[in-house]
Structure formats: structure tokens, C-alpha cells
Image (cartoon, helix red, strand yellow):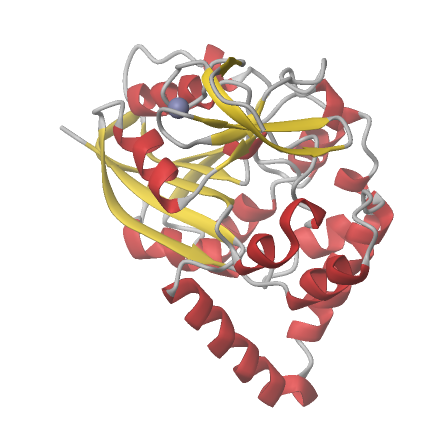
Length: 304
Ligand SMILES: [Zn+2]
């Protein structure tokens, strides 16, 4: 382990000296010596543009599509969203197949006017085929001459971006004063990462940014346009933890991830498993309280 080597600039503070942290396949993680952010040093060609995702079958496998559109899939995100935004214009950046907006629109048909944005490809085509209004323009190229959204969401997006700050700046320009920005990212301080280290499946080549509560706070407040109204930790998948604990730490095939997602979604809906379900919810709440759950979320309010 060496200190002070020059790396790719830190996506949070833009300094470029860090220390090597972990290596896993092609992924080389470094930690910024100035702000402690952990990020991938080299960005594989194609990842930054999003072209990478078009080639991947997982995003459109029938199992993934099924679970994306079940009511339970975005339950936590919806609860958080509804707590802060009851109506208005909503932009979902990185909307993929459109599962979140579909739920929002079908549950609260009168409350929201929605728009999905993502890199053009089969996932976005699918969202459109389900009747969702979508934009095929890259989010950083959106016309931001005037603020026009009440809420902008980034569900599992920021960890994929080479320059996440550009997206946050754009969101600040597009949000009306008092509007809300929602960000969900994997939690580097989760129980799973503490137990598994780089063996954890979500430490993977397509994830470039690894936030902790403090680096997420730094990332979102540095700009000066936002205040944090809620920051917390949610989601817990004990099956992933169990499987990865016994695995060799190699990449989990997309098909298997899709099947697991479908299976866990089905388990969550089985009445016979209600007692286990309550135990599970208790554990998830406890982990969330201790900031040890799988994901971190932050709700930002655009300053006037
Ligand atoms: Zn930094």
C-alpha cells in the first residue's frame, strides 16, 4: 500500500492524490487522501457513455422486467419519495425500464407529471412501450435555462457515473427552488461490505463511486445549492450476503442476479412467510438505524 500517488481526480473533491485500497478483476479502487472518498481509478471505455449497458442482457431479462414492475420493487423509494414530494413534475434520471415512474403514476395518477431519462437503448425503449414519457437526450445536455421540475430522482445511478458532480449540478439548475433531489447509492459502510470486503458482488467494475454517509454528505453539500433534509440507510439482502460469503468472489452472472431478484420479490409476497418477514423488517430497520444497511439515501432540498 502506497501513499500520495497521482490518480484520476476524486469525483467529490477533485484532488488527485490517494492510496490504493482494493483490486478486484479490472476494478482498481483508490481512496482520496483529502476527503476519504473511495472510487475506481480507471474507468473502462464505454462505461462513462452508458453504451456498456446496452450490451448487457440482465437489464432486459424477463426476470428483471417482471420484478421491476411488481409493486414491491420500489416500495422503499416510493415511501421516501412520498414523504417529501406529494405532487408535481418528476424527472427520474437513469430510469432504465421505467419501474419507479410506472409505480408512481399508477398509484397516484392525478398527482404527478413524469419524465424518464436514460441513455438510448432497449431499456428505455421498453419504458416507452409501457406508455412512459421518456427523453433520449443525455441528462447533462438537458436544457436548463429555467428550473422546471419539483423532484429529480437518481435511484442507483450516481455509483455508475465517471463525473457525478456534473449530474448533481444539472439537477440543481433544473429543480425549482424548494424542489427535492433524491439519491440512492450502495453503502460502503454496510454490514455486507464489512463482512465480505471486495468479495461483495456489488463491488464491481460498473460501480465507479463508493459512498459512505460522510462522503455522500460532502458530495451533495459542496455545491452550495442544496441542503440535506434526510440522510439514511435502507435495504438489506441477507441472501446476497449468504451467497457471497460462500462464493469465490467472482462475478455473479446476470441471469443469476435476475433470478435472485425475482425469487426475493416472490418471497416478500408469500403470506406464509409473514413472521419471517416481520423479523426481516426489524433487522432491516435496525441496520438502517445504525447506517449499516445495503444502501444510503439522501434527500436534498434546492435552496431558494
Ligand atoms: Zn476527495
